[in-house]
Length: 391
Image (cartoon, rainbow, N blue to C red):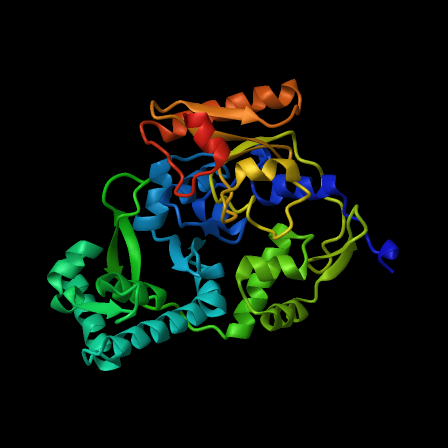
């Protein structure tokens, strides 16, 4: 049966990355929101990733351009969402990410924290938590953006300490401030604002904000699945389940609502694309990219075989499966890069993509160096090649 399905070759899949992920020069985005939407969401666990992933997809702009979108215009926001991971998404897409994924995570986080309060035995409960949250929000309304430590200093309830795993070998005492702030953020009642320090810092200030407009969860999951298929298809049910962290049941219901088409891959496997998205896409011009650690293009599938040689995985990923900084040529990972302490951008090929690729990557390294300026980039999750390059 699969032989009669439309064929989407590995070359076609790589061509799609250049255009749909806005990595080919002619396809680059004109706004930060367009850059984020092209991959549905930008990984934001590492503050620098949001900036560097956007940079790779923007026709023009600077770190200040991304800061303006995040903190002044608020066109891009960070949400705890897919795979219980922090992502940055456009404000247009945020209600769908919130309803499809973040609501479930927030509810689980709250149940877990209330269980810890109960086990602590000091009488702290849901009513106490509600008062602590209200006090935090009132303080932000009065004093404006505050860091977590500033907010904790201003709100006595946030200086409360509880004991986890009381009486057990791993008993620990923990302050509640981080957990309460995390809950408020997960519920969409506060958001991360401009950090202390430079754009590479994760010491965010917090501001009071309104929760996202309500969207039905099933409707939201269908919309996320539709957008993801357009950006990452051809892909599989397993890929979508991995990327979202949804249950298999929710994945299947979302795909059924989208009604994807089936296609055949080079290796004979069957994959899914958006409805009607089976025609070949014009190849973009040759393109090179230096993408940061955790960039979505490297983390979009459970199976990355079409753009990554399995022999290179051990040096480009850490032990937990987080991808490090990568060098790309025409939709394929061909090496990695790093920034040395003196600011120099260095990169290494893991094969021989040819002289044209080397010239293009050297130009991209120069472009990246100019964009970063005096900032220093150290990925939160270090990988063998990145460590070796900065040694």
